[in-house]
Image 1 (cartoon, rainbow, N blue to C red):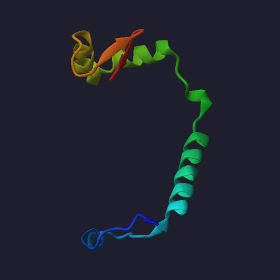
Image 2 (tube, rainbow, N blue to C red):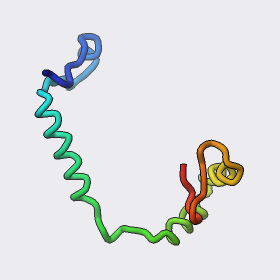
Image 3 (tube, rainbow, N blue to C red):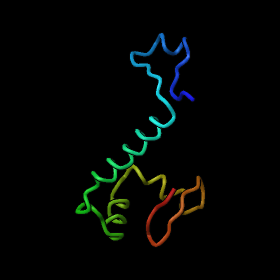
Length: 84
């Protein structure tokens, strides 16, 4: 099985086209996941209080807060934290 084959029309527009096997694709995907988690810095974790303060001070979230307060747009507030 070949994963990643690009159609002729799309290939003509692409600078990088490659065919890889399903196992190669999965291996690359798993390697990417590992490198992402390896690069997380545990020293940058914020507390809930810090997150709430950052959300409240971010003016670009004002509409989101307004929607959450009237239960619109799939926004909601739980324990003081804004979610979407």
